[in-house]
Length: 509
Image (cartoon, rainbow, N blue to C red):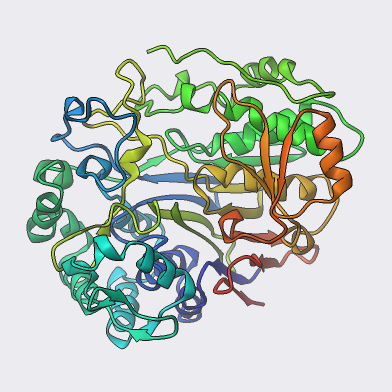
């Protein structure tokens, strides 16, 4: 066995790997990697966002799932949004309780071997020592300069309301001091006293002190399906992780002699068309969720037409900034972790002078009063985060995930399926052009954007009724996908995406 980390930023990987080198395990390294990612790339994640993690326990031969996402605050009043079709990205109602710090607490308590104070220390050091502005960070800061330029928590990023240029070394002393508070008083302090009051004040008490102090991350059972000889594991609702599993299971059930692009696209569209109808916070009634039920999958694939693209018209319901990282250690402990501020740098609502911003995951709610995903205090919104983990014969085989909002399951099925079919290695698959579908709700036609696609393939898809756009370039938004897999020698190998220049693999053989 060996230690491996894959993350979207070289500093996240480098500093996370140092935790492993000092005797920490995969969970310790995952927390450190996530912490550093939020410092150097706040356009992807941070302590103001949510977190999900699937942990492979080699002693039990199966994983467990941590839900560190937050619920809507007691101060929400949907009537104040009357006339709007959706919650504005920068509205206080877009902010649910940020769960990431509580997630770190649970991960460290249950699986950690390194004191959390030691992990926080590496983040504190980086905040005060500084780092260079990346191209992605600069673009995000520039896009939101009008909103963030005057924020106290954005002090480190702007001078005279202009973002620092690419390559400029910056420091984040405010966030460093916040991490020092958590190091001294414990991670629970994030939800208490001065920090909690500042969070509440920043959203005009939509999140109350009680909302914050009562919050706990929850350990749950992951969803799973048997697919092509593997067992696939993913996060529970209200995340859309099930779409990866249902799409690939449906593809398996529809027998085909060779890889069929039309079939894969249609399998995804069938299940994604029903996503907004069945995906919401089930609380303690998960048995009502049908997304990974074989009878549901078998019934839906009857709609598949091998000759042409269809409209999938399902009835009304009854009732992008993200960072993905994965780690494996020499003892076989594996982590599939995803953490997000949702849209880029989140709500752009800063928390006083504590140096961080709050996410806007609340935008996952809808404003249809009779819908089970309607904005309601105490409920969690629909989540696009979709971490996965795959095992075979009770052994961890590979871990894979990506950022990309609504694109996540689409991107994952394109990379996972060829591997399950033994068509290509992950190293080759990661370089292949990808496709995305922007609009996949009920009764929408098939409109697909490809990074690159041949004229012959375009004509084949067009004859089956797909509308195809060829972008003729690799796009950052179509990844990055991070992979760790077991090779023939029983060692784990990391694979980084070519779409983000900062992504890096640590592979300690």
